[in-house]
Amino acid sequence: MIRHLIARRKAEAARHQEAADEYRAAAEALRAVGTGPLAAALIRNQEAAADRAQERAAEQRAAADLLAAVWDGRGITNTPDGPVTTEEW
Image (cartoon, rainbow, N blue to C red; front, top):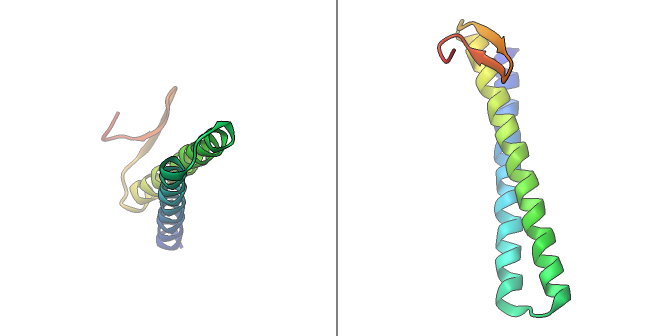
């Protein structure tokens, strides 16, 4: 069960990372051909979407790491900065 959750989180992270890469590629393509305020707004939107997708990918990777720590028998400790493995703390 936990291994399935770990794999699912990793797959979600990969999907979000791929989306971020696609958004960045779209922004670069717009930069190459577009000028003016509309193109600039579209580029900003693509870059913002890429940043959000990158953040979601990082969150999914962190969740997979925490699940893996539980699966491996490492302890998890809650700190003011969030949960960490006892090895990190």
